[in-house]
Image (spheres, helix red, strand yellow):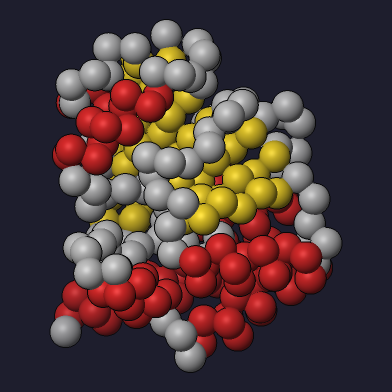
Length: 217
C-alpha cells in the first residue's frame, strides 16, 4: 500500500514536470490528450497481456520509461537531422512522439502489439507528423536499417532473446549506439562487437537504475 502511494505521488510529480516543460508545444499537447483518451478505457497493461494471452504464449510485462528520464537519455546522445532513433518495445509510442516534436532526428517506434502501432499511426496522421515511422513486429524481426541509435527498455526480456538479438546486431556498422536499461550487453555472449562507452544512473518507476550506452566497434 505504501509503495503504491509513493508510486502515485512520483508519477504525479513526473506529470507536473512534463506539463511545465513540454505542454507549450501545441502538437505534443494534442498528442498527450489523444493518448489519454485512447487509453483511458483500454489500459496498455491489459492490452499487452491480452495480446500475449490470445497468442497462447508468455509475454513481456508492460512498462514505460518516464519521459523525463528518456529526455536525459537523449541529452547524452549527439543527435542531428541525419540520426535515426529506434525505440524497441515502444508501447503507446509516447517517447517516439516526444522525439519527433522536440528533436531533429527521425524517430522509429517498434512494438509487437498491433493495438499500440495502429493507434500510434492514427495519431501521427492526425497531427501530421513527418520523420516518424512505426513497425508492428517483434525484436528479432525488426527492421533496424540505417538506425544510428537504438533504445531498448527490455528489463524483462529472456536472456535467450537478448543473445539472439545480439546476433542480429552484428549487421550494424561501426558507430551505431545501443542503449539498454538495468543490464549491459557485455554481460551476454556475442557482445564482443560492442564497447560500453558510458553508464548513467537514472530514475524509473521502481527507483534508480543504470542505463548503459554501448557503441558498435
